[in-house]
Image 1 (cartoon, one colour):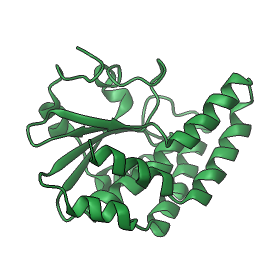
Image 2 (image 1 turned 90 degrees about the horizontal axis):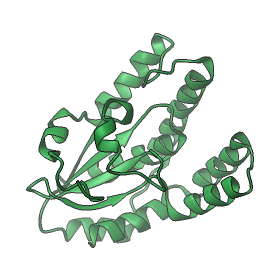
Image 3 (image 1 turned 90 degrees about the vertical axis):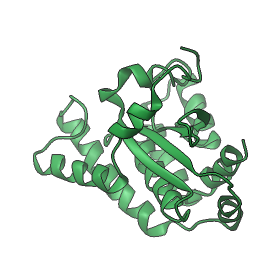
Length: 202
């Protein structure tokens, strides 16, 4: 298998995927049991997951499809599938997955999205590492034949730059994470939509 993962059976993974609505319902059900997705249900992970639920709600309420992305979607000649690796405890997933859902929902059937939990599909995640790490969310774009025709993730380029600089400076995770989430709130998915325009143009 190569970096693009073209030897993977993406049709099988697609069939295993869940809708965004099912993903949200799963997270809510787990929270009711004081759990999150994955195997680590520590108080810290549960706190992240509950906070991320509020972040998802905020993105859902504030998202506005850009004119450029809307025009590009309308010009698509063939439907696409977005297979997204995610987890409830991941802050970047909370900031980006709801926006991806809205793009799909507003596409008029031209883009369908399904989600898989990263930790339940390690063999797939291992094909889509970022700088050697299992960073999520990871969007794998598939064509009508379930062949890979692009990817995106785990975060917009500006957010990735901020992460890289903070890690190089050995900055405390909680400190730079707060700064990045403030950037997400101010950016309101604008950079993500620009990058999705590039993805859809591949």
